[in-house]
Length: 167
Figure 1 (cartoon, rainbow, N blue to C red):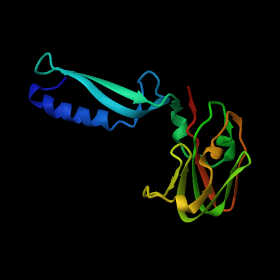
Figure 2: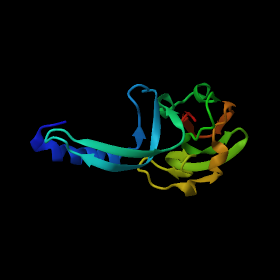
Figure 3: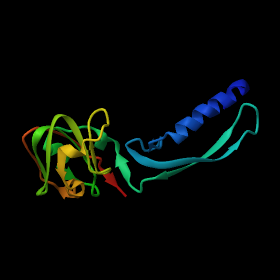
């Protein structure tokens, strides 16, 4: 609902918000969000000059994600125990070394901060440039299993964004 002379302007803004949505959160559950895969507007009605109704359909990842799981953790005690489903963390590493998760290893060598994204299976830098050549190993092996996980680093600096999730 808006001023009738500004309705189209507001609708243009709303369309952009819907089409560019990356996450969906409900006001009655603000500790959880869903990852948006696709968004579409299926109908637009304007019963009065001031009121418009927009129906949007969101296709989301089947998992629900915990908001605290989006934070960067430094201490392994904060992310090693996963009380949820298998999750796909982002490992933030710098320097040269070996990241080991439950016995599986990934080697890295970079003078800049790298983001090893186990969900998207890609490594990138702060500028979002591909840096896959700076790592060797299997991304899927670095996922955190339900329960206790052993995460170790030999050389370099490690920070972890756990991306805790559940169905």
